[in-house]
Structure formats: C-alpha cells, structure tokens
Length: 114
Image 1 (cartoon, one colour):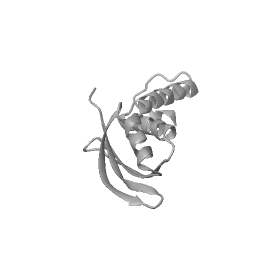
Image 2 (tube, one colour):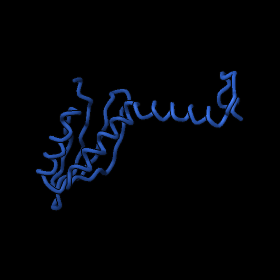
Image 3 (cartoon, one colour):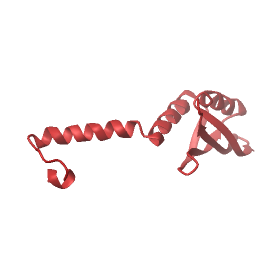
Image 4 (cartoon, one colour):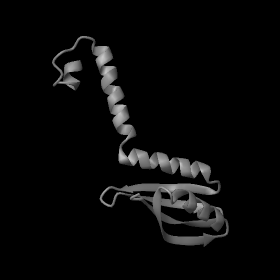
C-alpha cells in the first residue's frame, strides 16, 4: 500500500511514521497555498465584521482574485468590511442593490502587491 502512494521512496523502515511525515508536509504546503491563505484571511475579516454575510464565493484562478456575493445590514457594515480588507486586498465593488433590510452585491478582492 505504501509503495503505491509513494513509489519513488526506496527505503521504507517505518511506514506509519513515514506516512505521517508525508501528510505533515502536505498539510504545511496546503497551509501556504495562495487560495487557502486568502480564504483564511477572508474568514478572519468576515468574523471581525458584524453585519456582513457571505452569500457566495468564487475563485478566479486566471485573475488571481476572490469574487464575493455579500449581504450587508447597512452601508456602514459594508464600509467596515472594506476597511478591514484593504490592508490585505484591493477591494473592487461591483453591482450593489439597496434593499429594505440592507445592501446586497458583489465585491472582488485582489491581493495587494505590498
């Protein structure tokens, strides 16, 4: 079984330990993947901003950006979200619709270059 998953590994002394090491390496790599990193940042921003609800999320790999469909209870909540996101992302608003219970619309988040 081990050789099926790791065919290039010649020396197998402790398959269980070696498998755990491979899994730890993959976990570290996944933690540093650009999309995972951006999603983690977005999750933190959303949890710090009351009054914002993420309705849908898509990843534009070609454009290297997150596209959000959000609902905000007020323009103030939307402004707070934008302010919290700006240190990390360029926030580009899309179509926004004012409704009796708040604002709905699209935002695009692009990674700041520095």
